Each structure stands twice: as structure tokens, then as C-alpha cells.
Image (cartoon, rainbow, N blue to C red; front, side):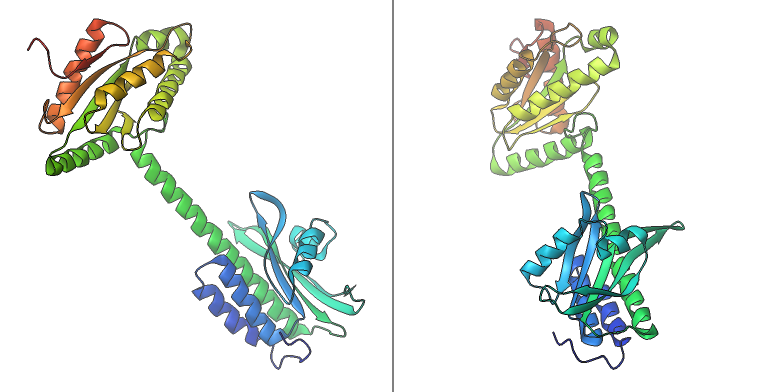
Length: 339
């Protein structure tokens, strides 16, 4: 980077900086392109952009120019001091120009430090700072300062845009997750289970294989709710869900489809074995509100117990009814042995 030749027109930096912010695919690329444009027009010896990270304290160095690894590390340490010009600019939202300092080699250094400020609903907030340094002597005129102010505004815009995009992506991911999961237990919801069951049945029909479908019902769940309240009931639901999630294979799917009803979709014929493992794991849970936690289960198999989802669910429901009649913690097949 050439640093000694004064720029013919410092405002030329804005054209390249605008293009970088508009076209770059990432925040780092946008800010790096902004500094490149600034370096070409303003000829600083060094420049850096630091931004605040909501998940970490202080300022974080994002991009720099004219600084080796040692200088960058020194800057990251220096900005932890509130008196550092980058930190001061970010905290006070005030620009400082023509600040004199000494380089490590003892030569004179003149710096400009500007805050990155964004506004929302009329409230201004600092998201970081941008700084430039020139070897002395260098005096910034009005055009220089206006250009630096424009660059700071563009950098702030890039940071704000990146954060809005990140927030939008996180919100979209949250809504997508909520559309497919039960909010209390984190398991698949009824809609998702129905879709997965249809897909597994279609695949099994093509491959002439099997699918197991199990329904679980918490024994005497109403009594637990009445004795311990809804908090105790929610605790039971979360514990049962945890055992379900930990007991199944990677290819299996578990979900909550009702108040205290859970289901398992298991490709193959191992549904009864998996259901028994789940029942044993739940029986080992500590009591809640003085009551033990157990579940009963009904298991059905495609294609023996049903040729489609509705028939399979009906068969599992019949098996669950027989299991509950047999007593707490029982499992029964969808096929009635006496039928």
C-alpha cells in the first residue's frame, strides 16, 4: 500500500466503498473492500475497522490494512482500554481527527477515529469504530473529514445490514423449527410425524420392507397433573420426551401428538424392541409429585397391520388400548392375538 502520495481527490474513495458494500456477499468482504477503496484514495499508512459483538465484550477487529499480525494483535489488546481512540470513538459516538501519536519505531503518527453509528426508531447506537493513520505531517481538510465521515456511515450501514440479515435468518429458522416441533418437548409435532410416516410408508412399499409405528400414553397422567399441578405435568412430559429421544436409532423419529401421547416411526421391524427399550427407560425415571412415571404402548407394523397411515394408526391405537388394560408399563401389538 502506497502511503506517502497525497490523494488527488479523497472523495473518490466513496465510489469504490459504495460498490464494495453493495456487492459483497459477506460483512468481512464489504468492510475489506471499503478499506481498499479508502486506501487507494486517501493513502493512509494503516486502517482498521472494529465492531461490537453482542456475544462478546468490547470491540473485535474485523479487517485491517497496512498492519501485520503483530500490529493487529497489539491493536486488539489496546482497544480493551476505554482510553484507546477506537474505544473512545465507539463509546462516545464522537469522531476525533488529527490525533497525534508515536509509532513503535518512534516516528510521528496522525490518526482519525470515527464511530460507526446506526439509527433505529430515532435512537442512535454505536456498532463499532473505524480508524485511519498517516505518518506525520498530515492535516485533514474539510473534504478529507467529510469523506471519512461518509466511509464511517457506509461501514455502519454494512454492519447493520449484516445484523438484520442474521436476525432475519435466525427468525426464519425459529419459525421453521416451530412449524415442525412441539414447543414443550422439542420433539416432532403431529404434522411432522404425519409427513414422515407417509414418506416411510411410501419408501417401504417401493422396497417391499416394513415400518413400525408405536403409540405411547403416559399412565395416570391426569392424576399427576391434579396432584402436582401443570408444572409437574410439564416436567413429566419433558422427561418422557428425553427418554424417547435418547432411546431411538438415528433412522427413527419420535414426536408428541397429544397432551400425553407420543409416537415412534421406525423403519423396519424393530418397533416392538425399541418400544420396550423406551418403556424400560421411562420406568427408571425418578417419581414426580410422589408418583412413578410409566407409559403403555401399542405397536403396529406395515404392511401386516395396515396398508396406509390411517390403518396403521388405528392398529397402534387398538394395541395401546389393550396395553393399558393389561396394566402400567405394558406394550401390546396391533394384531389382536385372539382376533
